Length: 99
Image (tube, rainbow, N blue to C red; front, side):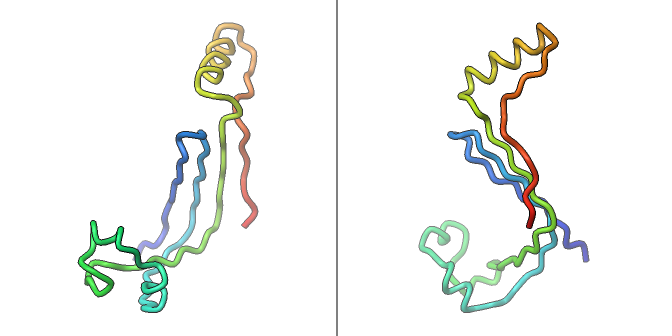
């Protein structure tokens, strides 16, 4: 069975992003379901015992983050300036995370 996954998180209002690669397995830890359950999940599931509800345990192998240093208008301006002048523009903070 193929268990590789790629998770992406985005906080668009602050232009912060996280990309995670790893392996997943389904866990049937009922105590964890009880710990994590909230009424918000009733939008998708009939309850904690819904047969379509599953928990994934993810083993992270690699993670990468990036966020914009400036607001969108400044970032677009710097990108346009770099395109016109040929100068490299540093518009974000980025790197890998050691897990």
